[in-house]
Length: 493
Image (cartoon, rainbow, N blue to C red):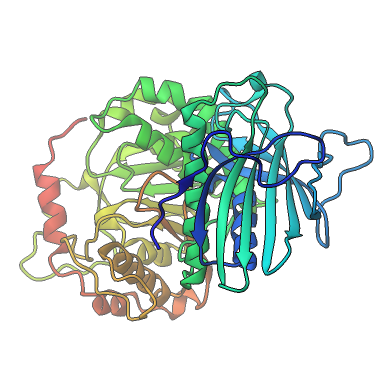
């Protein structure tokens, strides 16, 4: 059943009656194949996750919820108390008060809203379920940008047991004398489309594959993200020195930095932060943000970037780790990689650009879209006894060559090239003795899988790193590939 909603003719009478005398005008309706239970499940998800409907919103904080496990406001908390609407022939079943949190708090303020679930009926075989939103404002001038400029909106689900078919519809309580902006109709159609899509998905057995916030809760990460964005975004975007899109890279690294800051707050509660190393740091922005936030660490990449000079003394200074500058040119040549016969001897070349992959124990390794260094991340972490996060991007093997990772063996996993890469590097980490945790990061990138190693399944001493490297294709040719990079590099210092 495709989605082609039917618009109610202008001036159509209300479908349900507000006992306060307010008029709820119907806008669109559409047939559906999902019943009351699926409707309520979708609506509760939309209430708790308003970002499903609007990219302008981060989330909803639930201030009040009745029923078992709910949150009750105090008697003096007038702000969070629900503002109830009563409808004829409908019984109020559930009430929540949510606070909508916008992405840009400098432009728009949060909005409190009472959400109500009602059960009603008609004569015969029809059952009705109504979900109404009552925003806590009194005039159109108070409506934030991200919310329809109406006094209220409601979703109605009608189910006919005789035919096992239903109808969903959307209704507005308009402001008096307010013009019926065509934008409001488009918003109504979009809201009904999302409801239909998710409801029909329930009927066809759709199972959500992507799960966010499995390691760190959504609220602290998004709160930190918003703080970083407000504090640094304008300056970083205006001073961007690369040819790439500044907004994408800046906001992406804000998201990663926010996750790391909250992850580290949990990992090192009551302890000193051990420092971080960003391998394949690219433009160095993530290093800069973390250091600006007071985290000691540094990063390296095979070539210096224009951006490095833009970050100022905090990044160009020393990291506190043996006096290293916080952004440096290095090509990785791990100390445990055995040189093959006929390969170039690093001793015969200028080795100042080489890094041996040795890090102080406990240093947190960051591998953010590090490409050739991605499969090396859990191996380096094991050799130096360091926790890590790797965010895979482009697939390479342990020789540094481009490589199509084999498809996951589990039939319930995606067979895409990216899913194959994620599964492959996860297996390397597992074979290195790590308990691998997965987080789908809230960043503007389709390459957003974060693989975290902070707990061990096996002792470090029990791992045969040579055997692991051999299992995953070996390192033959890696030394030559590294030395080619060294020979081709123009010296910048």
